[in-house]
Length: 397
Image (cartoon, rainbow, N blue to C red; front, side, top):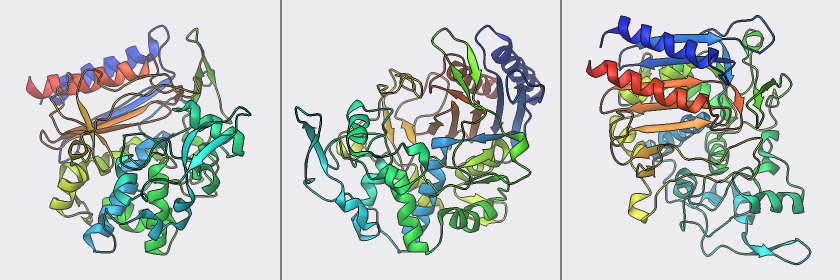
């Protein structure tokens, strides 16, 4: 790989992503091989209308790209024999057994509920087959929350994940608050708050410093502001839109703030079969299990979503036309992706248009970070696809 040519191509892409009509306010993008970052770039500003530039040490709300880190803690527990994926989740988080299956609504708009046909397992939560969803991906979940006064998941509270099952466990892939429940299980078994467990068992061994549930005093001035994109394409800064700090609950599915450089250390751990600069996080065979498509044996696939709150998410799908499964806990492409990503690679995204991938076969990965709502932004997601494609093009050049 010619790093100079790659750097020039990606610098131009980032500049174009900011300067084009309807572009992004600011972006940070990094790519890595198994040894180190091969590209680090930034363009634009932290907030439209302000002078502070976006930089490679800018801080992002990484939303659902938190999930794979929480899942890694579960696989450590599996390694140690403290937990099995087919254990019933209620054994560790009894509140989850209170959740019922939604069987429609009555004439007054009140939900009709029934007991699930079986209990939710840890595997169901890791694979998003429990029946739990997010309110912005399900009109029924949103209606149930309104009827029962359940707060939004952005409140980072236990009450926000005590919602409803849209189907019986194991029947379908439905993306939702599953990994927040996984975080509760980790806390129960480790006897400590999730953020403290992450620091001890993941961040410190990988040398990840500027990452956490909440921001340090040093991180706050470098926070990239979330922007809202209107239907006409205009962007409005939302400086007060941020997760509670400190949060009432460390949300294993969405709660971390981080610089992109810190996340690259996690991606390299995956590329190096569980090894980090200050110790091993997972055994190689456990990383293989983490990356396994758990849906295939169930006859299920992972697909797209339909929005129920357009201000938070556009209707969309990653890699449409490509057969996709779900690993523990990432999306995985079952065939080679159009970008060049190898079959069996791992990827996921965060609500404010952060995207990453890790290609263990090729030994490369990357992260593209912006702070824009709704998800699947018309400028940011295509920028990520071009970013990834450019990395592969220069890898083979």
